[in-house]
Length: 131
Image (cartoon, rainbow, N blue to C red; front, side, top):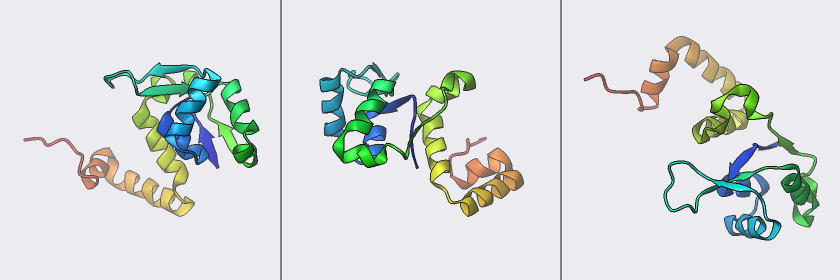
């Protein structure tokens, strides 16, 4: 199942609907979709697309994507969940978890319960060095 977040990068939306980045950028211009700059990315070219009802309607009315209309689901409003919903890292983690099989999710749950956050980060080789 494809998940449309409230705000997505061009790459995220392109991956979600199976189109090229250039196609998404063209749709942004032609359809006048609302976008905002991604904080911390210089040059102003990296943008977040607001996935409004108009964007959803356009995607579901596109001949190539019409078959996806039933499988596209919009994530809950991130306002209820605080700041993390807008964080690109948090969204990427959610996407990875959604792609995992139930067995993989269970193994991850057991690993986290056994090792905790610091053990998990050590296994990923991204733990802070306490030198």
